[in-house]
Image (cartoon, rainbow, N blue to C red; front, side):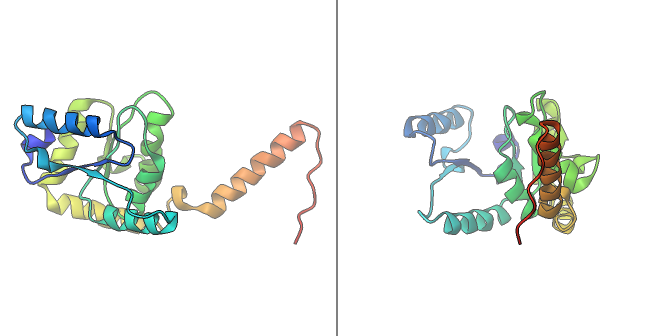
Length: 185
């Protein structure tokens, strides 16, 4: 529906783990609903070196207008990459932890309003995507907001996360009656 409403859009999907038959089915379905199948593209793995692939992935993400989180389970690593690069993430928050990961990341970046990018129903999900794609001013405003927020967002605060994790480990050890070892320099 978004591809029909915003004719300039292209949908990028993960291709490295999508069988060719499934890719063909995506393209066939697009054609059946009046969308040029060439507007659906599948990404492959560009490098055997994970660090090179990560750099390439971040570079691609910076060129993406909007990242669409899946309804069933969020892809936290890719969502974190998108937010780090300032790419707005539209998410459909469900009732499971996996389906609310992106909402938590957006909340960390934007506060309780989650940049108005999270929703709980498909109609609003589609509407938010289309609104972002049709309003370059709003989209660029969100890009600026996300890029500014990443410096203080808890989702990217590794020191705080590590401290909280260590605190949790000490609490578990204490509840088990274990004494913590002295830290080694």
